[in-house]
Each structure stands twice: as structure tokens, then as C-alpha cells.
Image (cartoon, rainbow, N blue to C red):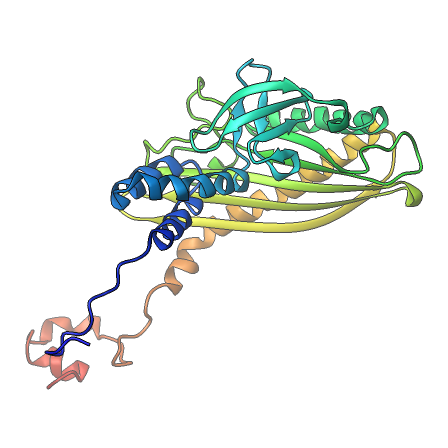
Length: 331
């Protein structure tokens, strides 16, 4: 230890430690803002090698966590960067177009596409259920989330050739950013610019946000039963002269009977619509009550003296003597 009571000099962080810290900031960036965070992180690090080490790990995590939608270069559609469609680190299956897209996670672009191989596709029997549900959910998303994107994947039992086998589908419903005034109604309305892409975020009004939901659907053929589990996540970031974030989550369960592909698709979509509409209504109700509940609770009800300040009699106090005496904070 150095003499003079000054204490030890702080140790220099290793490159690995710096990369881990940078990775945390990048991976936890608000939706649509990782590129802004990356610019600042890169500047602070002052070392491209460390930044690239962190970015290579953080961007895939961030993109998958937010179900990033990227337009395919042949303009055939959008591929979701979702775990359900992940073939390897840079290749993602798009079930709607039966294509595999290669993506650059750091640049957040889709570079090439190829037709999916036969072993990457579900059987015709499963595809009938998947594509019918995909069409019905796409109709719902188009009506509810302007610029929204969804995809339906077969995650279990994709080789089933006919009735008698159980299988699982998973649907990711993702809205693009909502920008503009930060209020509850904006949660449903996304993409301010009519020419913006399917998943475009803008910070020009100092706020960004995202609505996403993931629905796991288990078709149990032997029980003639369909179990539905949903997870809805809403994130918002308001950063005009401050930094306020909303992170709201809801998990729910429901069920319906096993029917034909068409009837099952309608029933499942109605269940999704019901839960999402109900959750939105609850968020709107909480926003209405926010000033009278949560914001008030953030304020200290009593000063540290545990005595309410007598605001009605402030005119009779001298600034240095009477207030000090009244509040009991004398020397």
C-alpha cells in the first residue's frame, strides 16, 4: 500500500473485463437504440478490438431478445431473428417463405437468402396447421399493429405425417417501434413514418418502444386439446431531459379444443386477440391512475425530521432563525 494515506491506485481492467462491461451495456440497450449505445461504447473504449469482441456477442443476444425483423434482400418478406428459427449463429429460417436468411447481426441487415432444405421444413400435415394459423395471425397483426410482423414456427413434431401425433407451434408477434407522444394508446400504433420499414425505431422525439408477444401452442392430438401459453412484453424509453423506462410483462394461459386447421387458427387467434386487448386495457387504466398512485409514492411523505412543514404559516418565520427552530435542525 502506498504511504501517505492516499490508498492504492485502482487496477487497470483487463481487455476481457472491459469487453464484458461493454457487452452488458450493448445487450441491455433499449429496443431500437443499440446502434446509438454502440457508438458511445466504442468511443469510450477507444479500442476497436475490444469493441468488436463485445459486439460479436452482444448484438445476437439483443437482436433475438427483441425479435428483430430484417427485410430479405430479394424483398420476399421479413425474417424474424428468433430462437425458434435459428439454424446457427448467422442463419435463420423463415417459415412463411420457406427460406433461410443469412444475417449480419452487428450491421442488423440480411445479406443473402436460400431455399430451405427438405429436412428444415415440416411435413405437409404440420404445414397445413402452421400456414393456416400464420395467415390468420397475420391478418390480426395487420389490423392491430401497423408495420407489425409475426411468424409461426413448428418447434416440435414437425415430421408428423397425419393425425395421432402431438406437435407444438410457436408464434412471435412483434410490433415495430411506437414513436411520438408517450401515452398508453401509442402502444398499439407503430411506425410513424409511412415509408419506414417493418421494424424501424426512431429517437427523434426522444422516445422509443416495442410491443412483442410470444405464444406457445401445444396441439395434443390424443386429448383433442390445444394448450396456449403467452408472454407479452412491453418496453418504452423516454429520454428527453431524463431517462425513464417502462418494462411491463404478462404471462397467461388458455386452451381450446383440437379442430381442423382452419377452425383451430380462428380459435387461437381469437384467444391471442382477447389476451392482448385485455392487457392493453389494463395498461391504459394504470396510466390513468399513475399520477395519483405511483408518482405520489415516489415522494418522501415526511422530511428527515419526521415533522410536516407548516406551509400555511411560512410568512411568520425568519429564514435563518424561525425555520431552523421549527424544523429542529439547529446546530
